[in-house]
Image 1 (cartoon, rainbow, N blue to C red):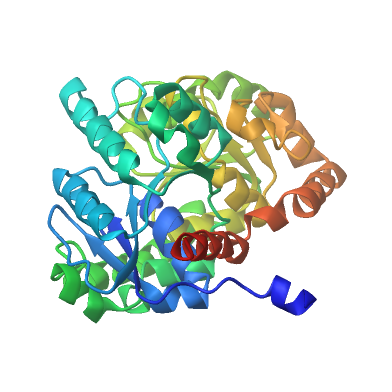
Image 2: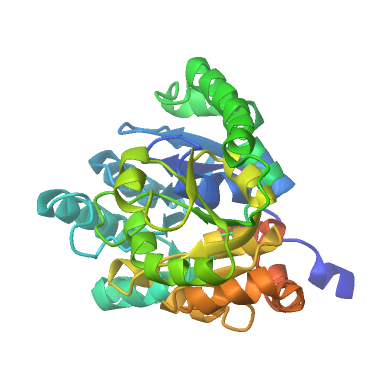
Amino acid sequence: MNGAANAPAALPAGWIVWKLKKAKPGVASVRYRCLMPLLANEQLYRQSVIVEGDRGCSLEGVAALIFVKTFYRSDVALAEEAAKRGIPIWFDLCDNIFSAGYGGNTEAGDAIRAAFIAIARLATGIVTNGAGLSQVLRENLPADCQGKLVEQADPIETRELTARSIAPRSWPNRAVSRALAGPMKWLTWRYALGLAIKQALDGIGVWRRIGHGALPVVLWFGNSSSKGGNEGLGALSECLPQLRAAYARLPFRLLVVSNDLALYRKLIADRGVPSRYVQWSPLGVFAAMQRARVCLIPANRNNFNRGKSPNRLLMAMAHDLPVIASSIETYQAFADCAVLDDFDQGLSRYLGDGAARARDLQTFRDRHWPQYQPQRLSEDWVARIAAAGRR
């Protein structure tokens, strides 16, 4: 009897359709919110189908429909058709779309929010990346959507899962995807081949750019956020006074892995701390983490960051990199194993005290690592879909 109670949930018969804006595995939300969950669970993998773009999709044989950060008018129409057929619908959201400026301008932002709310009203559940974004949605969603919120954390990104995510041959049921929605616009063989070549070259490039100097490497990686002012590289630039103070006591090299060389040169290069820039890629960042001793994650308190995921902190610490981060709400849960706000003394702690580094990494492994395992989080999706299929 106990064995039956602990048996994994069984998915209902039919296809689990993951609807994306663009099936581009270089995009973090595509990997974290779609590809890694389905690749980490064999049952989910066997029944999953990925479709993309601003177009319709046949719902024949579909058991569940999951929208992942896509806001086309055609998505609303697809949700309406699914609701008529009694197909369970989820909307997986990982951005604070209610922050000022989201979408690039007011008109685009309003259209995104209108599409989201229209689908949310039809949905079985609205899946967020954590408590911060859930609270934002409680403040902005209509009353009939309030009870639908479910939290699904981003999993720890591993090199194995990332390599499978960016290799389209690893994606499930591609023939079914073509039958339901036609060929993918973005996922062509040229794109896949180009991405594979780029990954190989980027991995080599990281090692060459870092070199083999004696100074320890301090890593920052992420989106440059060139339009965000004090986000991304802008947030890193605000930390430079603290980094210079730490460098005066314990010299190090700063490695920046990002996607905007011009902005790096404008904000970071030649600012009193020796640094190198490497173009970001999904696999190249793993080579960077191998060479680094500490990871920096500065961020500013603002409305957009209320919905921020701790995925970079999780990724770094899971690969034995201690983290110094800003004390925004997302990172406060890790105050027991990371240094918050004090980038100056944090660097002294982790570059100069091996025992402190080891203690904090062990605390992370003991208290946090288990709950962010990809397999465990994938099982949550299976249980969610299975429960809706029994209703």
